[in-house]
Length: 51
Image (cartoon, rainbow, N blue to C red):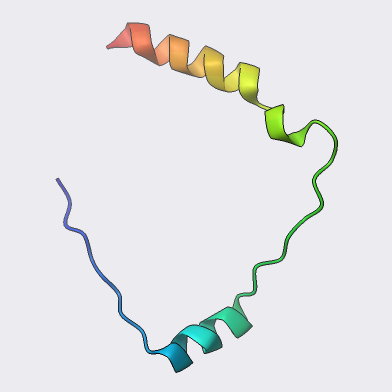
């Protein structure tokens, strides 16, 4: 199992990081929430039987 690395930053560093890398919401189109539901189901069924 791989080791978990914890990265600590000060409040100033965090705010600077957010300024450089803002979270930009994109408008959802009708049907986006279930767009890949059938593809994901087929993939999970395929991998379930392979093991």
